Length: 283
Image 1 (cartoon, one colour):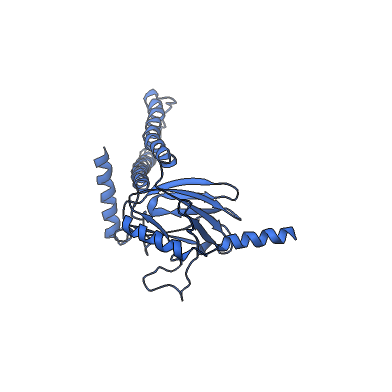
Image 2 (image 1 turned 60 degrees about the horizontal axis):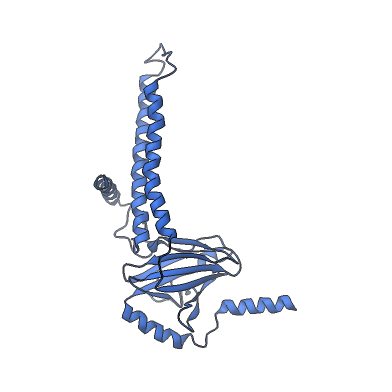
């Protein structure tokens, strides 16, 4: 059954490529004229893609069936072709089918859906923990297991970014994680509701003031991955991107050593804002 689904999805993809509506291989950032998801870089994202393909095939089959049925009924049973309408009011077989078939379809959808939901919300033992705090309008990060590593991550302007850095996605301080390790994300906010979303990892979770949400990912490929805040958090909502670099364990260890020195005397801007806010309230 799975091979049939994959074959149909492959044919659909080739058709879109032939018409020029789909870009080439998906990358870690949105591409011009791209249709579909970014290339999966975690087990969760791979399961999401498989579930999406299943739903897409079911939707196409159901839509095609209903369309053909409507066309057949319109042609076969219009007043001109069928001047004497049928008086039949019940048909046991049809009534059983339109009850049983939707139940079967829902079961087909429910099994992978519940499996994916359980897999996504059951956080395994983490190798690394990172806390992300949403501010208006940038992200602050802390590595609780690594003393002294906390920083703000602010979008680069057109004057600051390099030629190979995408506009509105590149940041000054990036999140770095090792490939193949379980990363637990603790997500919160200091002011309004934000959302930490990284499509290539299949992660999207709200950052809510006063609440600590948790999610996880395991990056399976080295590279640079981009995401954005996915809540309408205010005026500069479109300008608080997420940039994650997935590197080897050796490069990660080197980055940790460098980060301890780089951020040793650094006070995250969000903490300054909170101190100023508290002082103002006290006055």
